[in-house]
Length: 262
Image 1 (cartoon, rainbow, N blue to C red):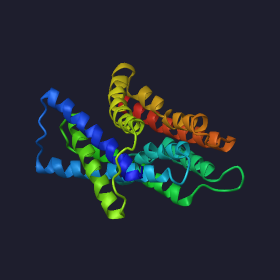
Image 2 (image 1 turned 45 degrees about the vertical axis):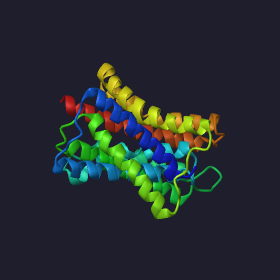
Image 3 (image 1 turned 90 degrees about the vertical axis):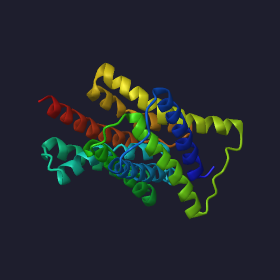
Image 4 (image 1 turned 120 degrees about the vertical axis):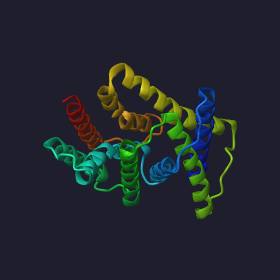
């Protein structure tokens, strides 16, 4: 299946699930014009982030792409410092330096070759748009549940995939087999719904900082699955790149935690 088809079913099925949850919660979907404008911005940013990430999978192993994607917390810290006058600390500079070093290590392979330049740019755009998504959520005056926000964001994403498919001449494809339907359902339920719900419970039980740090294991999980399930290449350079990026993210999370508790 082509990329817009996979993402259409992921977001479309997830939207249906969220809509059913909101129905049981008896939560209204009505929003004001100002809220609709903010939700539209969030939807567009999430479309760009998801689409560029999935397109990058055509140019590099998914594990490496997921690792580079995890520079988004560092990008968030940098944007907040540059445009929202957050204090630039040694920790911020160190995290940016470590993240850049990690990306460079991943870009240049052990054999002297490099990753696809197009693939790297796509992942960095995905990380940047996701960082902007987080900032908009944080700075916007939205007073509504996570389910309601995701109701509109997922709807935007599903419609965005239809528009992208029409614009690029890639027709939306039905999953060809029952097994394919299983996997698109998995994409809708596990990463789109279960992960969000479990993140909320994790933050409630162990706190936001440990949750965020453990969340940094995401690229490690992607790399391990890529290696052991899809036979993607592994090298010491890849390992060092992952460690540097995870260290950068951990510094950002711990710094924010100290500032909030101060």
